[in-house]
Length: 272
Length: 279
Image (cartoon, rainbow over all chains, first blue to last red; front, top):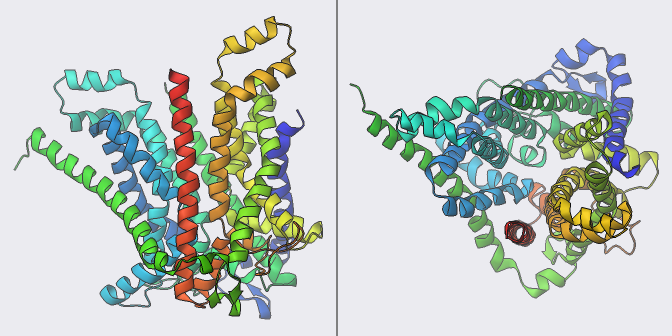
């Protein structure tokens, strides 16, 4: 009985300790100066994280532009157009993508993707574009596996009904099945966003880590997670508290994404 | 021009198939690229020698040991808590507000990114409890991180044990606890082990949560109170600080092979488990 509350207790401990370090700091610096100022100079006592918030959101958005269409397309193809035995081989193979450590993705970004961007489009290579591409691939397993489950749970009668009315397979997919599974697929994408915004090691390696508001996708950016991980080792005093305060912002963002995804899933079951 | 439904379908299938092909191609590329550059570096000496000059030369032996020990200690901590939660949720209670809160907590925990676990482990285990950077701090942090996976897979496995098993056991005069211990858990074991393997895979590949809790010492650890460096952390430091690209590739290859091995094992076990269940 007591064991059953381990997960919950851990969650509360995590929230309490991170908030305890971060929230008083935010209160002291001022909500507005912390979230909306672009001036990050810990030594001079300036802690504005606005560029990092924007960078995190843009990189995540970019990752979704890559990962969501690709992932949903994979899920639809595997679930509706491929025979069961083939799916049984392809799906675990794709899930192996999830097992590849994030540092390895980051490394691939540095040695393969960034030089390619540099030679094709110019700029430093380590950039928002590079981070979005790498994160887009990293969220694929999340999006594919949840979307496949969602599509598999659409009743067969829907498919048969559409086909009986003379629809082609593709018509039945995009007119009936995707509509029926819409909220579940939205949840899959939101959970993917949660993963992308929280990803750290791969992003540090490929995003370039310049604290600035990017003007184009080829600019180097520094995300919230990258800032925490890079400076955590050496930070002390208010600087360290500032990093925990970034942790608070990140924590709240992720919780928001999770809550959104859960309500999308709930909506789906309520609609049935 | 109006395209006929038949042609639209052909187009759609081509595009969707192309997307799937692209995804598979990326996967194959990542693995082949790393193994292609890394495998030639690997030798017995590379695996079993101590690193020299911060990893510029020599082998990766201490990081191999760290990668082995850290996940094992983490599982040792997470397993009782996770399986206990699963048993409680599925055997000792019905759906009520308390179980809903536990499930909600588990779901939330599953969504927290590893950097937050790292921050928490650092401020709680390393700083507040004054444990310092050590294997135990790292393992406790990882244990919390994999808890949701273990709870979920164990719960699925326990639910899959047929109700008739429990009824027979109870009708023979066994108490509920005896039933859980001698009937339910042994039958759910393959499913639970699958969850454990998945968790080990995740621990092996983890960097952000480990580097701030277990540290990055390259010395061979003597107890759980020593700091250690896992392969993932070692690879990150080698690659990020440009210490040695050659050794970075070698470490990455060993890292990927270990993760693939552990994950394939867990899929294999899961499939056997499902096959046995449907028999």
